[in-house]
Image 1 (tube, one colour):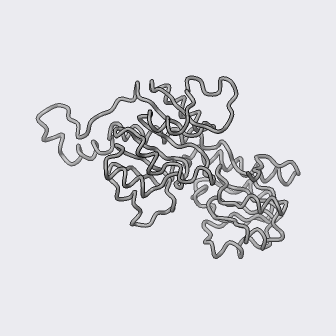
Image 2 (tube, helix red, strand yellow):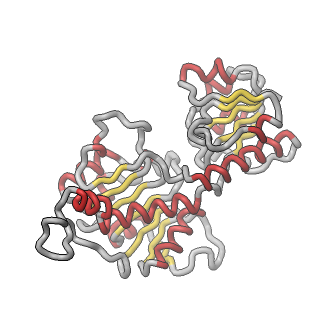
Image 3 (tube, one colour):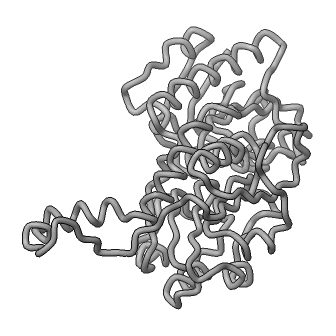
Length: 320
């Protein structure tokens, strides 16, 4: 069965291998595919694998041989699920490969906002410790997390792992989620409405999927609800945040700081508002990309294709 990978480089920049996928059929792997190349490269293939290359209704309708779309990630907003469902095309994702890695980055960003480790290291290298009159100095106020309130938007696998880490740091935990949870799934977490979460939290972290309902969830009104000492962290999806509103909130001191691993345009244009906003950390969508997480991702991608070929597909995604 002919298989094509549209954008395989970020999953495997050269330190992994595609051998197990190639063993399942004739396989063509592209590092990157532009929107203009999608139909040309996908045409004639029954199995198409994509990470960030969008497969919209016009693509799906123009690919009569297409039987399966495998998303090389958890989020499936790059695929028109309704169009695929109408054509009887199976769509799968990889739901749990990066939970530990994204939760780890969430706290790396929160700790950087609280302690400014990188900035202090830069100051030492610039000679400011060497010329200090004291054995210890701080260039910014240093914040202890214990006793502060962490607001978690979304209590899926990553949100629940973040809650565990927050509890280990001695933080009070609030959460907003639309997903029913089994008893005992999020111990120590108090569920509240969104406005209450933004009002009461010292740090808000986003772990919900990007949908029509969550796009722009963090807007000027919700930012105005936050404490002036509070932080916002986004390791979910860029469009969850009105980025211009966030830049204005940072410039005006409405909130104390933000850290984002995702933006609405990736890579961002050089004039993106958050690249020039004060008190804002921006990392290049790396939360998912530890070696361990990518190895798990590759294993499940191959397993998903294999199970589909065996007639027993797993991790199937349905349209909302």
